[in-house]
Length: 277
Image (cartoon, rainbow, N blue to C red; front, top):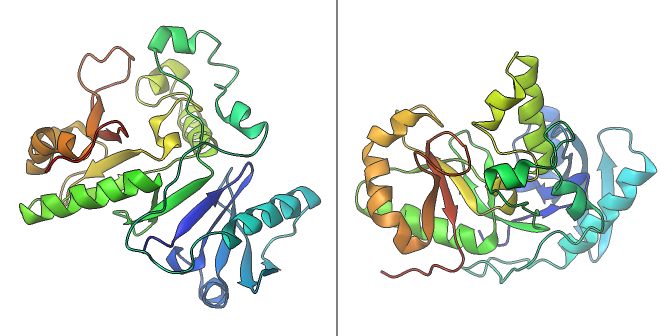
């Protein structure tokens, strides 16, 4: 299903309606009649459905839209019109980051409370978001998994190879926008965690590998998501032996220089490493 893509904008994103989950029967009917679903990145709210026919876009707005939203929505729809209509069996070639001027700079900046010394202290680089992401299947929770197109191909090969060895790998999450990362910080701060505590578990907004679409949190049935207990599973053992053949590496081992807690579930695809099997 490589003809399914998420078009990633500054404030909004546009995703194929057929892979999105409806929150109600009424919305399910809306999705069934449309090609695309428009969302607000800051909170994931569904804003509009779009039907694209013969180069024309028909919007059905679910929430009242201001001019700024409509302008970006039309720009995203124009990008969607250029995408392949039929599955080709492989992801299209894709290189580059967001083409939205200004947004790339904003997405790469840490929150003002973190400070300008974050890169020097952690060694983590700023990560721009891609403007296009490929569908990589569904995650553990039935949500679409969005990845860099080449990373999606590598993940499919990794997942298939593990299954052949009777090892079940489940994606927990893939691409996460800077806005989503900001939301994680806000929720944890609201629960009483300090910023320093959060930064030992989550990279600062703008610095997460998940922004690239090349990072995956991986789990296995019966094990809690994003917990150190994953280290004791056969899935983790298989990954430590085989993941590098598919270009994946664990980003945060014990004692990593970034100050991030041990994350045996977090794996990153590196484009410089090719499949050798």
